[in-house]
Every structure is written in structure tokens, then in C-alpha cells.
Length: 221
Length: 338
Image (cartoon, rainbow over all chains, first blue to last red; front, top):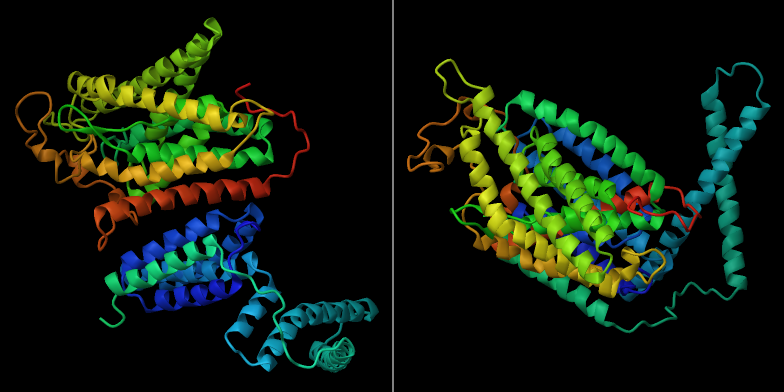
């Protein structure tokens, strides 16, 4: 979705999750196909490189699902593959179209405790950083080793231990840095966006989807 | 005009596909050379256009249906080579997802609708436009080009159908595949297209061309204002119009199902009375949305759903292709039509 038509992150988070839940409860092929088409439509509004990044994941996952389900009957293999494709695409579209800070801002709106948001916020950033750090350690080890190393597991535990110590140090440093900048453990959303016409349209579409679910789908057959 | 599977012998399908391979190769090369990264999604819009026009079935005299293709329009907007690719992809999606046109017959369908139609239509348009270099001459060229293009495609389809009973018979002389000879298939295909479908194609082409020329001249002339928003609006309008295609109830000539063909009356007053052998034990492919329907949804909703699905798939496909292509800084590179 274009920057210009940015949909309110709170709405996006609510409806993305509601879509996934409805999808997983639905036994109705027509409903699942409708959602698939809706997802494809919203995907087609995104930029080429974003579409590529999203499709790469969802196509691989669906291919894998399809192969695993091939021995089962035709109905469930198609149905589950379509469900998996749609769910993965929908979920993937959320971070690609919304800034991470807006998503945590949306969590705040749902009264999720600050400590969860803090952990989530830091975890996401640190997964990348620690991954890079681990890679650097492996390279350093490789450059320094001569000949064949039979005890690879020993060095592996060394890397893991080193990484853990490093992460503890880093987290302490970062928390102190955050305190120095005035962070007291509370998350406050600064910008309050007002609902625009696009948001209303988005809400209408998704309420329509919920009605459709109860109209053509049955939760328990 | 979509030939279903098992109407043609496998050897015909192979020959037609082989004939299309060089056309595709040349088209891809030409388009790759001449197109800029920003123009690739326009090919997707073109494919979406053609797809939607083909969904709008029109009732034709004789109880059958027909549709416009928009091949000439695409050829005028983005060059015949780009049109060939766009229509081919539209046909591929139709065959794979909606069961419209056969998988084996894909080559033959492309030959008629993605090769003969856009190239012939475009060259007639160009011929007339170069002779009469006025606004009216251009319009005249569009009307004649698209009319002749569609009818020649219909004629070619009829010939492909018509040679089947001549070439492929069982020992008793009963046709194995499409049962109607040239003397039946040519009038059955061409007369309705000459009278109605060709006129509709010409009118559609002229109307859409004038609309695009007015609101987004950049799509036709280089360096002019390009407003894709209006074109998207046109696509939305076409999507909303597609259920009109449901008003045409008959099955298009040459697109009957295996269960239907026995009772078809064509070329005389007798129903056919038998199901050709090659069709009964032929290749079947079950698409996800067969004939643009979905069990559990009303026909109109399924039709709109199919239209939206098709359009979205084309946009996604061509946006992804554009993402692969490296940015070219040559602002003067032109589409192959110029």
C-alpha cells in the first residue's frame, strides 16, 4: 500500500489477526477463495520488490504444504494449501506495509502490558544484531584455525556462551542508555492518527468479510 | 474462440505450440530491448484489460456466445510484441485457473488470439494511419484493424476446428475430435463474429483508445502526461460490468462440454448424435474456478471474484517482473511500436 494511503496501524493489526482466525475456522471453500482473492488484490497494490519478498516466502511454504498433503484427498490438499498461502501472505503483508514502531504502537492501544512491548521491541532488533555477532565470531574462529578441527562442537558451545555474555552486556548497556534518555519503562504513543476515509473503507471491507464468514461459512459442521 | 481440450488432436496442439515458440521468443526479445522498468506494469494492465474483455460474453445469433479480445487495442497501446505477451499470459491464466480454453490447446489459442489478432490488427491500423494521417484516419484505422483482426482470428479458429474431421477419423469414418468439417465450422464461427463480436471489438477498441488518449496520453505518446489512476478506474468499471457476460446463456460455438456435444445442432437440423471418441477418453484438467464459477457462491459474485482475481494476478505478475529488471536510466528508450 502506498505511503499516501497508509491505513491506521491499529485497524490493520486487528483485522489482519481477525482475518487469520476466520480463515483457520472456515470450512467453506468459497469463503477461503474469497479471502484469497482479497489478499491477492491487496498484494497487487504493493510495490514490486515488496510483492517479491512476500511471495517468495508464501510460495515456498505453500509448495511445501502441498507436497506434504499430496497423499491426502484432493479437497483438503487444495483447501489447506490455499489457507496456508493466504495466511502467510496476509501476515507477511503487515510488516511490509507498516513500520514496526507503528505495530508496537497498535499493541499499546490494546492495553498489552508495557513489559511485553519492550521485550518484543528489543527482541526483534536484537535477533538481527546477535545473528550478525555470531556470524562474526564464526568468521574470526575460521580465520584463526589451522588444519582440521575434529572438536567442532566445543567451539560451537564457546560461540554460544560468548554470544550469551555479549547479549547480557549489551542489554544492560542499552537499558542504561535508554534510562539516560529518559525512558522509565512506560510506552506512550505520541502521534494520534485520526481515521480517514480509507480507514473507513478498510473497516467496511473487513466487517463485510466477517458477515460473509457467518453467512456462508460454518464454524462447526 | 477459446478452443477447449480434446477438440483438437494432440498432434495439432503440438504443431500450433511449435508455431508459437518463435513468436514468443521474438516478442520477448523485442519487448525486453525496448521497454523501461516503469512501463512493464502497463503490460500487466493490458493483460488485465484483455482478460476482462474476454469475460464479457455477448449473445450471438444462433444461440452461441462470443467476446471481444482487445488484442488490437493492446497492440496499438504498447506494440504488437507486447500485446502478444499480454494476451498469451491472459490466456494462460484463463486456462489454468478458470478452465477457459484448454491446456493442450493453449498453443492453438495463442496462435489465434495472441498472434494473428494483434499483429494483423496492428498492421492494418498502421497501414491506414500512415495513408490518412488525420484524427479521423486514425479512428478509421482502429475500427477496421480491430474488426478485421478479430474476424481473421475467428476464421483461423474455424479452420483449425474444420480440418480435424478431415485428418483424424476412426476406421468407420467417424471423427475422433472436433466433428464438424470446414463447411460447417467456417460459417458457424465467422458469421456471428462478422455480425456482432467484430463490431463489439471495434467499438470497444475505439472507445477505450479514445478514453486513454484523453485522460492519460502518456501511455500512447512518449513524454506526455501519464495518469494510471484513470486507467485503473476503467478496469474497476470493467470488473463491475463483467456479470453482464452472464446474460449470454448459450455455450460458445466449439466450446461445448463432453456431455453437451451429443445434442448440439449445427450445420443442418439434426443433432450430432454421438460423442467423438477422442473427447470421451481425453485429457481432463480440473481448474480451481471452472468457467468462472465457485460452488457455494452465486454466479454473479463468483464472476466478479474471478475478474478481481485475474486482474490482481496480472498486476502482481508484471510488478514482480519489473522488480527483477534493473533500472534503466535511458529515458528515451521506446516501446517497439515506435
